[in-house]
Length: 258
Image (cartoon, rainbow, N blue to C red; front, side):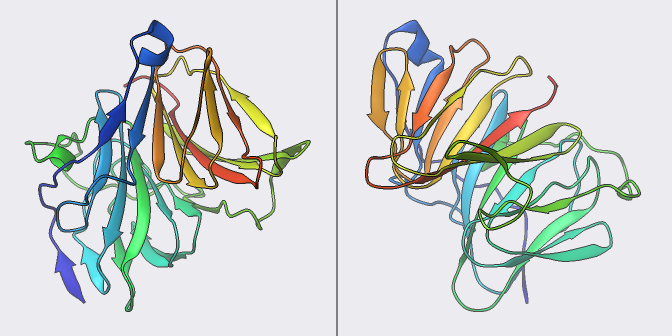
């Protein structure tokens, strides 16, 4: 396998904004139309309170092992990939999330064949994702994962453990610092209201379908690979499934302010 060194990666994001105060608290990043840059074709939204990136990793690549103070979520979108935390390597299938604990050694490895798309979320500003200097906060040596800590969870729609409210289903996976909530809107017209988080900025990533985003008096359809950035000062927003089908959304949130 080839080894992929950690390198500076460039950012290309189209941001849609509007002048009113509520929409200023909700920023829509059109990840799908942005050109991929860098060794893993990264497309990202980077803010002072968190970073979300879509990566298309080459086949047969092993990432350089590393550790840092902040937790992260890694979520494969199509193909399986291997993910190592500490001394344990797990196969991550589509929509199976990994959250390595703070300061634990971790890295991914892709399989042969086609490139592997995945999402990564971190509750910090990853300036290296935009080609700027970045020095992570970290312990001098990597730590071993806490005993009994769950670090991998299947969040696919076919998995068990979902909470069902009408035609809306949710499933959550949390670390100590961050969490991911999968939201499945099961039929046309199904909707869910999402409040802001007092812990900080949240990021909603549209995985499947073309749901409508409603914030205040504004309503717009959002396609897959759209990131909706929601600040702590925002009013609640609502997502509604499209009239011709369903939708799947990943919500990334901090659990505490850094």
